[in-house]
Every structure is written in structure tokens, then in C-alpha cells.
Length: 364
Image 1 (cartoon, rainbow, N blue to C red):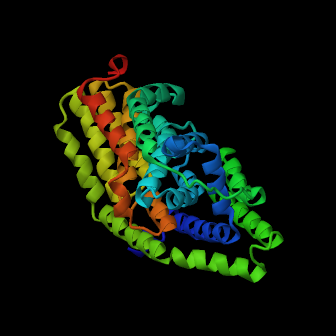
Image 2 (image 1 turned 90 degrees about the vertical axis):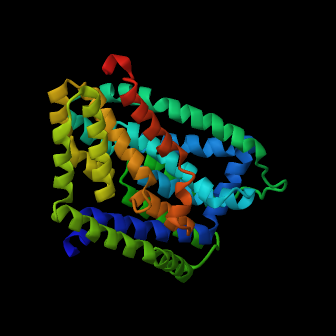
Image 3 (image 1 turned 60 degrees about the vertical axis):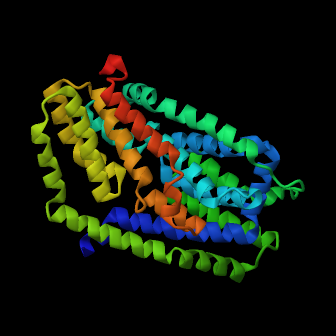
């Protein structure tokens, strides 16, 4: 249990939580979040707020290849917009989380894309073509829905003036995230610029900055404990043969469609046990390759199935890193977000339909 709790991926996740808490609270204390929200309300019409947040999350995650970095960057802005417009907080946070998984699934620099293509032996661009054919209908359908749903949103008639200097920390966070810089360095730069601008603009003094960071880190305490407990529990499952037992279930596979369904089922179960879609893809990848070779499944299709189903499960489990950090930043329960996670659910439906109805036909 202690070995699982101290796994390097778990500890890295905890460092991200600590830095995210420090950045979110220091940015809030110096007025960066309010300034960024005011800027968003000035730029986007009322009816495009929901669609705009979704597109921003899709674009950033596609550019940086990480759902965690996207959630860290956009969730505080989404929280501020929800507060000013009266949109339910869990609903707004779910839009960011859903858009974050768009890039996690499709980006060329996403860990899951790299793992899926390497284990299946196909080129990233080929996997992207097949994968986009499977999930793009879900993204477009959801975008139209958010445009329609946004028609009922009304922003305040009196929007405060934008304090441009206080927007800088978020612009730096977004720019460095888009540049592909490591999420921990992105957060560190955000903390540093929030502190310097806060002191220069009299948002707080040096000790006020330290106090804000301390409060933010303390607010992540429960999240850190849950993460340690989950890491230990999941390692106990693996240690006692849970993953190996799952693998044995493939011995009854006897057709191409059943082979694709077994790949999907295996990566889903592995993801439920590890709470990490990259680890799930790496764990099941060699088994999936064996099944694909045995039944003549196109390697581009098997890579797409691995990646999409891992993102589907990762996007809806309440103990995944993405859900925990989004819920921690918004100070709400991860369970309250799940009911609004339309994008992960839709890509799961699209991926299952692609197996059942042999789509895309050319690769099936």
C-alpha cells in the first residue's frame, strides 16, 4: 500500500496539486481571476460563453497534449464566469474537463497518443486520422449544444472594467502551456507573476502573498490525502493479481469485432484499476497488439480504440487526477461534476458505435 501511495506518478500529481492550489489562491487574492473573467465577459457574447469555454479547452489541450494543464489553466476562469452569470458551477467545470479530454485523446504530444501508437506500431498522423473520424462527431454535436444552451445565459449589464495588468498571470500561464512547457513550470511562473504583480499593484504585500499561497496549499489537503489513499489501494489491486486476472479474460475472443471489444474492455478495466489513462494504455498495449495481430485488426483502429476508451474512463471516474484537481480548484465534490461530463460520455458512445457498426469502414 505504501509503495503504491509513494509511486512517482502519485507524488508528481501531489506536487501539481500543491502548486495549483498556491497559484489559484494567490491569483484570486491579487485579482487576476476577476480581471480575466471580466475580459472574457467583454470579449464573448452571452450566447457563446459556454461554447467559447469549450473551444478554448479543446484548443489548449490539443496544443499542449495534457488535460491536467488545461484544467489548471481554465478552471479558475470558468469558476469566475459561473459566479457572474449564475450558471451552475459543476456544469461550467465539466465543460472545461470535457474539452481538456479532446486534446488528451487527439494531440500528437499527448502521453496516451504516444503510448497507443508505439504499442500498436502505427504512425501518429495515421492514428489521428482514424481517431478524429471517430470522436469529431461528438465534439461538433456538443459544440452546437453549448451554443444552443448558451442562449439562455445573460451576463451582468454592468461589467467591471478590465484591469489589464492583473490579466498577465493568466496570459503567461496560457502562453507557456500552449508552448508545451511542463505543467509544474507553468504553475511556478503563474505563482511568481501573481506575486510580483500583486505586490506592485498593492493587491497584497509579501506576507499576504505567502499567506495566500499557504491557504491555497491547505485547501488541497483533502485532495492530497484522497490521492495517496487511491494510489495505495490501486497498487494493492495490481499486486494481488487484479490486472493479470483481467488479461486472462481475452482467451474466449474469436472474431475481429470481439477482438476490438476486448481491447476496449481491457483498457477500460485497467484504467478503472490504475486511475491513469497513460498507464492503462501502456499496460494493455502489448496485449492489444497481440489481439490485433491474431484477428487482423488495423493497427490504426486498435490504437484509436485504446486511446479513446482510456480517455472515456479517465474522464468519468471521480478519483482520476483530472476530476480531483478540477473539483479541488472549484471546492466541490467530483461526483457533482460527473453528471455534466457530456464529452467523455459521447466519445465512449462514438467509440463503441465504431466497433459495433465497423466504422470507419476503410480501417475496419
